[in-house]
Image 1 (cartoon, protein in one colour):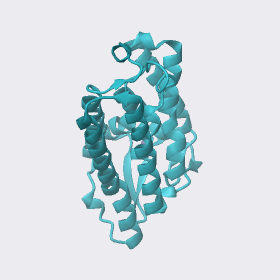
Image 2 (cartoon, protein in one colour; image 1 turned 60 degrees about the horizontal axis):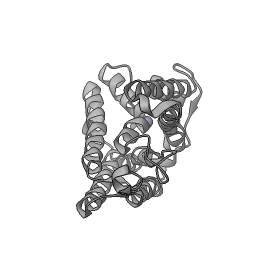
Image 3 (tube, protein in one colour; image 1 turned 90 degrees about the horizontal axis):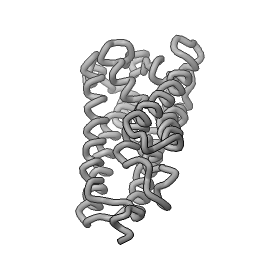
Length: 234
Ligand SMILES: [Zn+2]
């Protein structure tokens, strides 16, 4: 999954009925902790994309095995809590669950490339990405629904709502290019592996995209406050 991962990012046990523990950009980082890890490991050549039967096959045993996902979730929770102690024990669990949400969502869409533990032979993945258009629509709905709800439980100038819609369209376009178009090309037999970023560059691209999306939502979020913020109650 790519843009669909950002659906759960709006989830916060407080958001919608109290002052949120996390900002949305922090949620954006948490839900992609596994892909940030995959990007970093790709830079160092420990993970990456292999071409198998003329189709890209993800080699992501460390960042995307079930065991790896659990470890990354706990570490992400601990790092957030160390950097932002005010989130408390509850915040740790919120962050850890957001980070772990990545794995079951990937399980739905990935072709079988998710092992139980690094090096394990048993690969999991329900391959919904093979249904290129329905899976694209499902991920867009997951992201779009979450952003609409976020706009409802926050307040800000009108441009921030327009910018959020623009960010949504930008993310849909990115998803189409990175995932849907590649699937359609593989299915049509016209996929050219050379069209994709190679080796370490693929990791750099991946991390850059995740950082840019985080930065964009952070810029929008600066001008939107929770409906439960103290400045809003006055
Ligand atoms: Zn992933």
